[in-house]
Length: 327
Image (cartoon, rainbow, N blue to C red; front, top):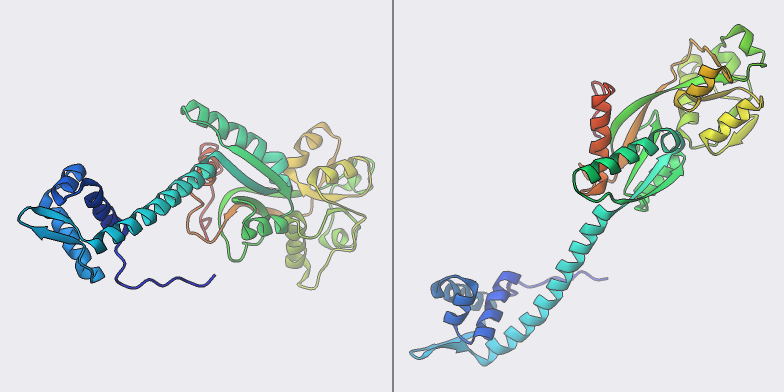
């Protein structure tokens, strides 16, 4: 659509409202009484419009003031413009309300499975306790690369990612931290020695998330830091699309895996899985909330949810550390 460029002769909406009030009241005095202002103020605004448009809008005489023939025509046009503007105002209000009533969230697998359920439950409870209404939340679980695409493409209002990189072109804030752990089934040969080198881990086929996942990216970065930029993981024994599928495959003794500690905490405590130390690797990672390029998260439910999560983390003593701020 070609851009519409208006001349400097077109009055603003507030001026058109004054002219329409004069047309409806039949006089400057009547318009002033209706608006609750002085007749002088209305007269001054009409004169300014006449100077701007170059059109005589009001005929003034000893018996009073009335719209000229041209003024009547301009007032009719003003009524149509103001009707469209009122529709635009109502539409914007509806969109604003929808943004508070409905929130589209895209989250990477670990966050979607391990953290968001309780975050969303407490968010809803807090909204109800405050006398409000909790928004409808539509949650999509994906890998980190897909989450970034959803937010960048506008199909998600906010996203949650895990991994070593900040998404280019988007803003983010750190909402927590996580650590990956190497795990095996109790019968695996690593279970007896409880430690693995970076080189051996890189050379062992693992149960792995698919390409684009934050877990896979974090492991790749850790191996590169320990073994050099050319280090790479050998092809996976099995690639799956969710953290829970990785956990299930390791429990079935398919192969070792590198997985979020959050996802297997109960399995480790119960002895269903064994944690293997990898002292050469830094498997810590940050969890981020991401949104579009605006400095602050989108107003409404998106901003409210991120604020709620950050306040929870602060109360739990897990608030972001130095350097963890919006980018």
